[in-house]
Image 1 (cartoon, rainbow, N blue to C red):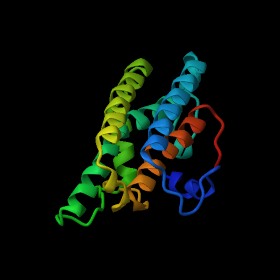
Image 2: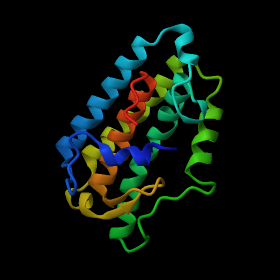
Image 3: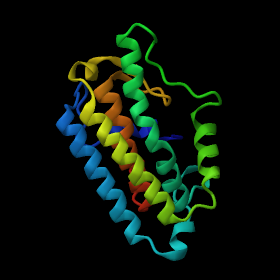
Image 4: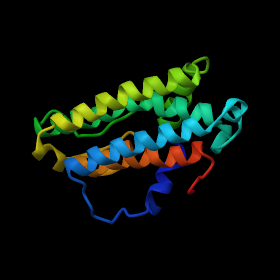
Length: 179
């Protein structure tokens, strides 16, 4: 996520201690997917290659990042289930560190078209939404830690990673960075 965790501290409308419920999570997931679709529709041709983000990421690379990580959000639910079952500490980890993981995933998608990246995001966002619809209510209170180091009840960490993280990168992609 690079600098994104630092930007989580200044989220508009996100109150300290607030924990979203399932309905709020579903609305947030749907809203940020639509915002991403609209932002992508406004970017034309060579504008996809223009720099927009730390370390020189361009719009296409930001979309590649979002497509590459969307499948990971349901893993947070798995972590909470492991904690509840007494089989884990609820911490997501990467072998090489989050920045190296992200760079590797973006590079793997270097030859993918914008349409392919958006389709990958859409497939994985649908799976993320299904996972939220199916999770047991009591699981949202289980403490977890994301690979980027965000900690708290599953519902809050899920919101920060699957909703706010996508929103912040959509702003980056559109050239309206909040950070």
